[in-house]
Length: 271
DNA sequence: ATGGGCACCTGGCTGC
DNA sequence: TGCAGCCAGGTGCCCA
Image (cartoon, rainbow, N blue to C red; front, top):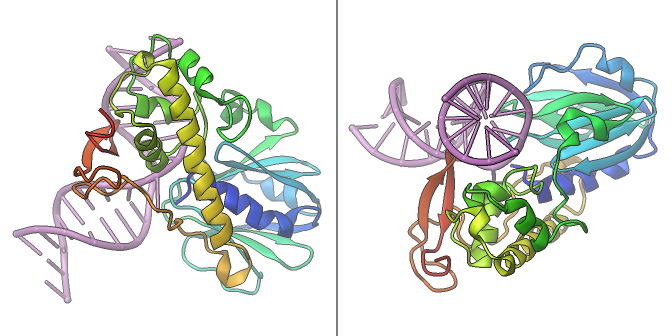
């Protein structure tokens, strides 16, 4: 499910249950995620306290008194808030149990998610060290895109999905942002004008912020039954709409493959 | 350095 | 109804 807005909504959902709380235990049922959950990570969690729940790109950062753990939801991961007595279901791979009796439960059918120990300086961890700017923070704009794209022949859609360029732009929002910016996803990144890159940066920001607003309203209470994070019912303009009319000009939306992923665009609005 | 392709997994849907 | 085949929202890593 998760693209950046979903990850950020998850962060906001679990933070109130974790920040400042004591950790009773980390209970691992399945270690075989994208990377094997290290044996002994439980000892880092037990008896400590959660200082902060942060985010960098699509990684959630659980900052404990003992160091920081990185949690990634992968393609199909989700977190929900429950109680330890609730029986764990299929694909409920681990629980973070607080001293107040709450249980943050990780579910991930495809097991592309991960739980990694990053120690005292998480930003120096190899998974975080080489990431580009956050799209919703200062440091990301069209000039940045234009500068980094110079000389690059890769298709613009793959370019904006590259986390070294900008983080948090997944397959859905890449198509959506390019449609909003009126840019053909197959154009070479290095041949896009500074003006168009400014449009694109603004479109990326808008798409992600819209989704974030939607998620915030959809998931006001992240507790118990409501804690399941689904995909937001955001109105997608081109994604998964092959053959359907472009919402702007009614031309049928086209579907192509780029880098083994689906891309959707309007051939008229995105020449 | 860059770009292209593969890998990791399960589940849901489609079509025969 | 059963089943093979295909597709899925991520991303690190290997190779040319």
